[in-house]
Length: 85
Length: 230
Picture (cartoon, each protein chain N blue to C red):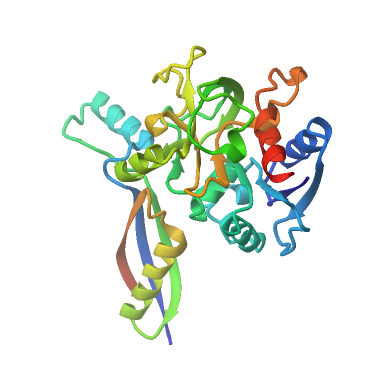
C-alpha cells in the first residue's frame, strides 16, 4: 500500500447565504475590487490516506465526505488534488 | 416519568435541563454519559445545549457518532419522545433524525437574547399544554442557529405541521426583525414526520421559573407528562 495526500475543498452550497463570504465580498468592493461577484468561505482538508492507488484513495475520501466531512444539506465538496505522500 | 439527559464532552446546558425536570417539573431525571449504551429505561431523552466536541468540523457533526446516539435513534424509532435543544437540535439534524441543518447566524454574531415564539404545527406530544398561536418568550444563545433546508423540504415541513415554533414579534407576527439568526421562514423548531422528535434553538429549560424571567418553557415538558405519563 502507498500513502496519498488528498486535498478536499468544502464550501457552502451556492444559493445558501454565506454571511462570512458576503462580508468579505462587501469589504473587497469597498477596497475597489468591484469585479468580485461572490465569495464562498469553507474548509480545506488535507488527508493522508493509505491506499493501493490514487484512484482508490479518492474513492475512500469521497465516502468520508459523504458520511462525515461535508454536510449534504448545506455544503459541496471537491477533491482538488491527490499526490503521493 | 423518567427523563434522560445526555452529556457530551462540551455540553453545558445538561445541568439546567436536570434542574428543570427535577425541581420545576417534579419528575425524575438521570444524566446519561455519551459513551453509555444504556438509557436506563428513560421515557424521554433530551440532548441539551452546549458545544459538543467544541463544534469541531460542524456543530453536532462528531456527537452524532457518540455511542449513545445508537440508543437515541432506536428510542426515536420506537416513537418515544426525543428533544434536542440548541446544540441538541444541531445533533438531531446531523443524525438525520430531523431534516435540514443549522448554519452560521446571518448576522455572524453569537446571539444571546430573549426571543418571542409563535406556537403552531401539529405535535400534540410537545404542544398539548399550549394554545395554537400562543406567543412564548424564551432565551436563545447560539452562533449557528440559522435553520436551512431546500424549498421542497420546507414546504413539506409546513404542509405536515412539523414547524412547531417560529420567531415572531411580541404580537405574534413573524417579521425579519424578530428573527435572530436568519432562519428560513423564521423557523425556530421542528419535529420529525411522526411528531415524536423535536428540535429547537430556543431554550425551554431556561424558561421554567419566574426567577429566570419566564415560565413559558414549562408547558412543553408538561405536555409530555399528559401524553407519555399516562
